[in-house]
Image (cartoon, rainbow, N blue to C red):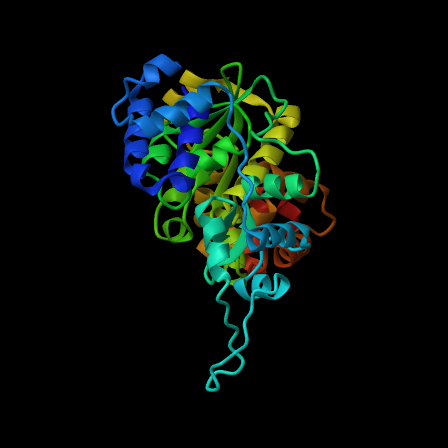
Length: 396
């Protein structure tokens, strides 16, 4: 993406810089996004919205004089250090108040167990500066990369002012343009930028991210989605019908026990793996680990333009799994739930054929295998028809 570092720098300034200049900085950011060339310092002075104040911060960027600003308040420093040394990645408000000694004497006799803090304003200042971030409801808090770097400086440890580039020189993420400009459930640009992996935006027909090496697309598709969209739309069905065999959905929220059954059904019925990741930091870490593994073990399935054409609306091929499910629905006693149970064990007709071929008691072994792994035992009549179809005439 053109001018990515400059955009990242200005976005950070818009959060922590002069409040009166915030709107002007946002106008400058919009101008940069429309610029088709790499911007120099001289070019930047002609952008819409540039004031004397913004001219100064642009000069500091192009001169390479950007630095980490250490909070002057002792309380703010204490909060950062305590959160950095905590063994828990996510902390509640009461935990932060307790560990940082931010509580004050309770003067409300009607609510004696309520914890009050007149020093919480210092924590809010750290939020405004981009040192901490919140996620979930009720909110949990964690240090951002800026906060971690400040903690390392305060402790005298080595630190990085900018993100490290991951050593994957040939790998690139192709990110959906519609996700960048329209998605509201997650900050796609921030999540991708934090990985340190090269990326570009493109109008791709399905998915949020494709993984590419030398214009060859790997057999993985990544989709961002809110949980409500995932359950109330045809998204899973659309992903299942793509040319990709490995389908991953990232839901930017906290996982609960209620999500388990849905994850299992999505895996068995649509071959989609769902991951709940609460913050952009968690999403970035997951993407790095996934893409690192793909770069070693993944296999390409075609050129970018060919995969785009293949997955355009109306050109998506039906998978073997789709045909297999339709065939099973024609068997007496095989409703949608029974089909789901059978397919969770025998993903293709060939896998069932090999099972019947090697089984000593095909009908009984088949019923037990589906019941143990799929969750529901097939009726004997249904099992006998299937076994007969797959060549064991003596078993029925």
